[in-house]
Amino acid sequence: MRRLKYMILLVFVFISGCWDRMEMNDLAFVTGTAMDLTDDGNMLCSLQIATPSTEGGMSGGGGGSKDKFYVISAEGKSGNEIHQKLQKKSSRHLFYSHRSIVFISERLAKHGIQGVLDIFTHDPRNRLKTYIMVVKGNEGQNILQINYPLKQVPIEAVREMENSGDDLAVTLKDFFISSESEGVHPVVGVIESEIHSKDPHKQLFRLAGAGVFKDLKLSGLLDINETLGLMWMTDKLKFGRITANLPKGNGEVGMMITHADRKIITQTGHDSVQFKIQLEAQGSLVENNSGLDINEPKNLKLITKALEDASKKLVQDVIFKIQKKYKVDSVGFGQEIYKHNPEKWAFLKNQWDTRFPEADISVEVNLIIKGEGMVHSSFEKESE
Image 1: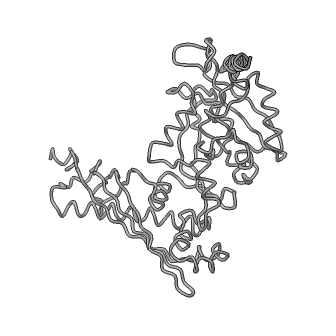
Image 2: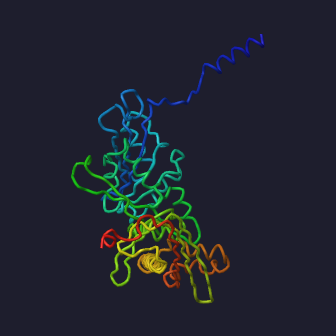
């Protein structure tokens, strides 16, 4: 009798299955989110959702519906209220695990994103590996509407751009860590739309630099070149391009950086704070409009010096912008003090907002050019 009971129990285990399992046909796959600020101070949340194919899954390359995605929006004062309204607009259960990016409009970022971050902090359905970006000069929901020609779902194009290595890629996890770390403020990537037509199917977008934050508010923007300098100083640069003009109007040269490194040396006195940034990079010469034959050591030295000077000026311009204009320690100079001299940082911590803009920061650049390729001299000079 006991054996019969066990057998019946075992049968129930096998036939019951996963009672809380949700079928794919019951899910709406959210690929991207945009957060905007309304005129009355509420948050407007928009979701880009992959359109199901006729077979029941997400749309693929061969068939399915005409549009690859659709967008739904809802307005509210809290994340819970917004999610409830969004779910009412979807016949399927909203599924966020495939979301790649969260866009925040420049207007909302300047107002403050405490409420936005609160949504992603407490809801376990949100992945911290999701990228976060600021939309320059536009509403976030407009980016979701753009139909990028090279991808089934355009948000995937943004994700691949972020992973390219020469643009700033910041996840929610990265942002949270920077926000809670000593002596550094968070930075995120910036995107903007290229409007050639009112038709969203004919519009494109591009990565447009970085946004620096302080106290969870956007303090200002850096352009693409300034972002390269910032990434170099924060040891996040994988590769990039530098262009320099040679002395006496002898032309222009360009270098592709394939390896970059940096070191920050900190010196703190009783009333002074000094930093020396040592930047190093290796790469190849990819442009030479000077007519100089770089097989000649003196010419290569001249070109290298010009590229080093251009790099130094680029970095100095970034330092001036974050130190004097925005007054935001986006590089993490304070963090360097905290790591190497915790006692000194304990004294400076509450004063850093006023001490950082007055800190003495110097820059040294050392470049090594390898593999000059076919850019020994311009074709025009060779023909002469």
